[in-house]
Length: 438
Image (tube, rainbow, N blue to C red; front, top):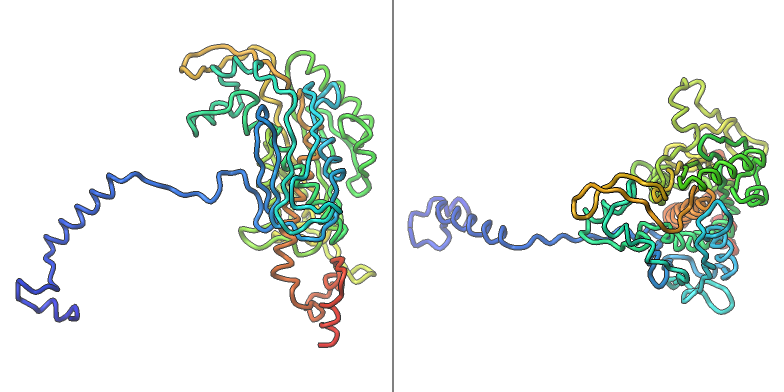
């Protein structure tokens, strides 16, 4: 029966007729039943997984049995060794010098799965684990009843109603071990496929600035001192500042600069997938991070368009280049092949051994003098963390770019830049041969 027929049917026994009163009552009863049901929400992730195609999940806490990561989506046949991963973990590990946390950990990693005995990725999830060896949970007795100012203690309680007191749980920087291990794999992939190099260094500690040529700086210069600042004069001042603050039981912040050389053109996507947005999100997820800039950053807002624009020119090798790099290697959310230059600011370490006013879990005003082993300044050890997150973003976008834009030959591209057809180091030339025959 059609709706027109139903509306003209006058028989009260007609099975197709439901009075408006009956309908309202049924709707009211249905709404009442739904209101009494518990609301169930679903989430795809609880914040421990990063990436779309090159995916990383970190696990573990500072005072648990160990920490680590699972890397899913890494292409097979990538050569990687424990030593390559361990190299970056050693740069991140505690106890390196007087200006880092005195906690002693070897941070020795083990590849549990995903890499063959001969050292090649197998296409399976890669599991890397690092045991904790020197937990001192007794140092956190005060923090069990009092919140550390500017730390995650209070907000974790606000969100979850519980928290891991010892070591700060997932808010501890030991969580970044998994990121650095995964980042070592991402860096190897970028280097193998497109010759990309990711370098970070400390560019500022408190008020001490460095003067570094980002186009010429080397890893040897960066690793030549405990601060990881390639400007040796500035590094000496930075070391002294951190050490003096450490002796006073206080902490300070600073800034890390990261450069990406030989980044492929075309990484990133318009609108919500912009490369600088992905980099900002990744780097702002690091513990103690407070600010992000790329290219000219905030200083660029003071310039005119005629002063800020990076003019293009055709290089002798047939590539489109820019005469300046105020864009920081990214335009329209997509990499343009110039060096990516970004900066990330880190706040002073929240846990300090000085009396501070705070509130306890019982809602009582009180004072706290924190104990434990903590960095007086996080930036020297943050360098490999920054490199790792940048590499993870780029590796993820490299896979996305290949999936969408590199399956078919590019010889007929409308771009005058001849480099885009051969910017990746492919071991077989089947696509190029197919394109030539076509």
